[in-house]
Image 1 (tube, rainbow, N blue to C red):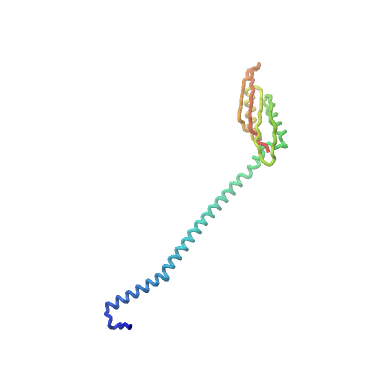
Image 2 (cartoon, rainbow, N blue to C red):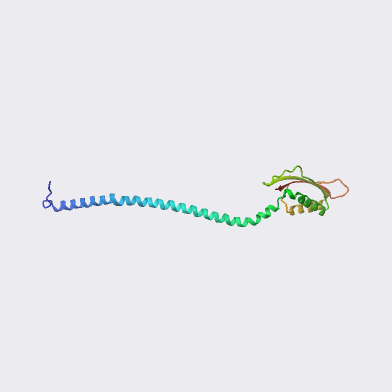
Length: 182
């Protein structure tokens, strides 16, 4: 079937031409533009996911820098921390420091160390009982001195009882303390 374009009216020609143009444009849209749009959406999704990943890496790097900075600040203090432990080989030094403190403050002292078994690899908390006898002001000075020792000594309980002796301010004091041994 042959179409004679001369017999088709001008109005029909314009409609036919417009329909052909619309079909060609629709074909171009289907074949070129829609696949390009889906490709652009995939690329956009990949860019977003990479952006999130980079932000996470940046945050981790910031945390690492902060941690490194904090470590540099704390490292010099580690030596001070180690000095506060009573070393198993230096237990005599610890006991001597307590005895010197008692003599300095003019009080008598009795230490109950109990049975101490220390694991050298892991610091341990050891509870001690210290019984003292002396004048109340001297007992207070002893407590202040105990606080200033280079060992970690945490007083758990303290009991001060007035002694029924001839001296007016004579008191007995019982301390239960935690010490840290290594």
